[in-house]
Length: 359
Image 1: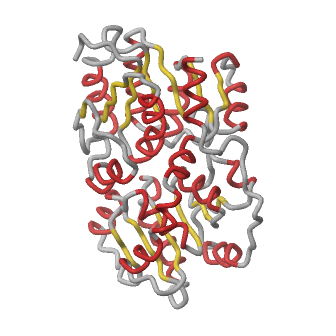
Image 2 (image 1 turned 90 degrees about the vertical axis):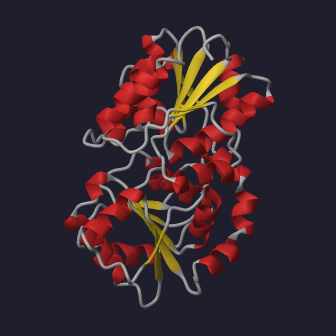
């Protein structure tokens, strides 16, 4: 492996990374670039890794480090040690990292320690909450990367406010929308099958939770009690992240009122979202996907690193408090504008990244 020269390397580790890398890897290889594709194994659950690869047409990685489920610090050290064998001047000219997970930070550190240029896709997002590991990862990665590819103009402003050179910043748009548009027809055509599979015969909410600070008894009880107020009229569908599923089981939560299902592959999940009346989430990517699809979203956090979704009116940050029932009612009674287009969220982000890399 170390004798082969690659044009570039791309590293992923978690579900959101897969959605971001798929169109870029495909575009580079279609333009005859040799890509070393590495999966750290940070997300090891079949539903969150293997099935999504198949779903979005992402080829098998050249290398899988298989680190699996470990603490954040152990993951960081293990990935750095594993990557050090592959990321150097003998193997690749540069490295692309994506998003804000442990694998992202690990890749950036290894690249810079081995004198390799590192490019960050989805740079500049900020929640201003340093208690979130994702926020710490974003700031550290952006501070050392050589090219920063931002999804929106607010991300550019964040980087400039941190005194990062404007010569490093390229506003290329949202690469997640590339994947969404690539699969849009499949998402729409899967509706009937998905509704039938989960016996959804009436309107429903989609609820996703995965952040550790939300998996506390008081917070989760507030969320579940709030959405349970609507079960007479709506189904509550919960594609349960392994972390949430474990917490529910260990704390013996009664979820019999809800439809708790396994994490879904990309197409099925977005088909569920597309048909939903309302999404409630602590995810970052889902805020963007609901905005593009013009679906209502309530963010169960005190802040968002995607303020553009709030500006467009599709998303509202409500935190976790006793007013959740009121916030849901307000959302249900709010009519969305059809003017939800965002600059450069057009399915051509991969092309722009390629041109900025090789142009």
